[in-house]
Image 1 (cartoon, rainbow, N blue to C red):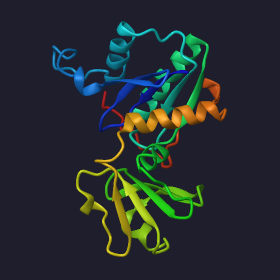
Image 2: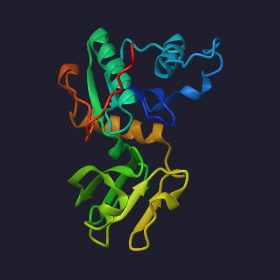
Image 3: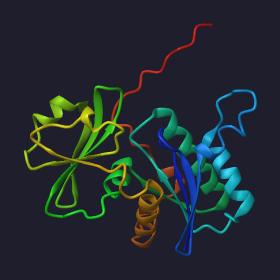
Image 4: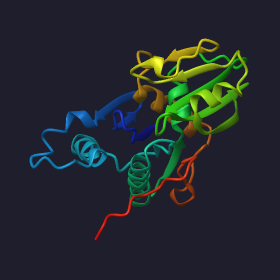
Length: 222
């Protein structure tokens, strides 16, 4: 099984190749200096993909896994556009993966009997959130953390990737910081393999981003 993985997260964008059980990852931070001689903002994912294709054959991938959000509007748009372009060019399909599933899957053990609320920073103090109960999506949206805690059951476990977990830690809830747990690339590879094996693949034209809120785009003055 050969899968191309694309993650356009703000923290650490990367592309990876999952080939017969081996995971080869190219992180954007590896190429920031060498690809930015004029101090221009590099196209991080394109740089990673270019480095990968120079060392590995990608034309025979079985599918392309891509994160579809929620998160940065620009990151989602760039990552999904790149994945769709490759899918059309390589005549393959996509495995869409939400950032909620990517974060939650970083836990070593997920109990089907517990209720998890995965949180991802939006424009603070707002957070994207997704509640899973008995392994199924129960609720998702975007709101301020304090408002969210007022509506959830007290046995809910919060899951997130934060540099400072006191940003959202609440005395009534258990909180798990995944930062030092399973790596994002490993989590994405596991979800991609599962999605491919279980037929959770889509044509590129049928794959949509998960935004969960309206974005107000700034208009530049002429």
